[in-house]
Length: 239
Image 1 (cartoon, rainbow, N blue to C red):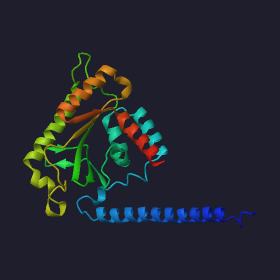
Image 2: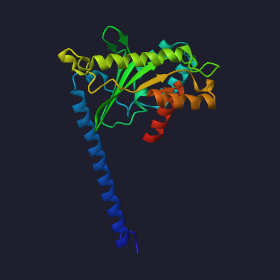
Image 3: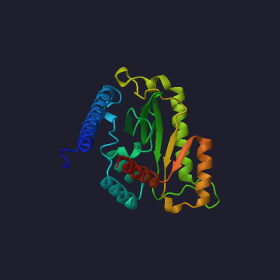
């Protein structure tokens, strides 16, 4: 009996064809859903220009360029410039699936300028993170096990931003077209990230101490390599 005459084979071919059609329809729906969601997000006048497309622009080439930039960075500004040009690297650690935004050099009144304010949108609303960058060559701890002057300065920066937000929350959350900052839903308990140093300069003991103190402060302290790791992990997920 030929394959054409075999009814079981014919059924299998039909099933395969239907599965392919269903898969194509599902993929089309995903694409359309992303387009609809992006259209809604871009309609937010306070944040439209800061929306980051976190799925489609992350690539192995970008990760390689980021690693090269880190290896050559000497001061904080080197890292700031690269991340401003490639903001998708800052949102890879986030989990919210309804949009992500990166605001560089955000001014809080006349007193403070953050390195970055990043946001993700979930079913709970907008969730913000204040980011303070320090040099990739800086140390987190002294030999005595205390925070270095650079790390202490970074912690104070985020604490000062929180105090300011607590005093000026109405102004901070008000849309920009209403003379506000457009930081929707933000409050004085905003989590913080400090990106400082490289992993190669950290021992297992300092890593444990860093995690312990990060929990107490509500500020996550990471090496620059952490951002690199998260970008690489995202590429694997997309594959």
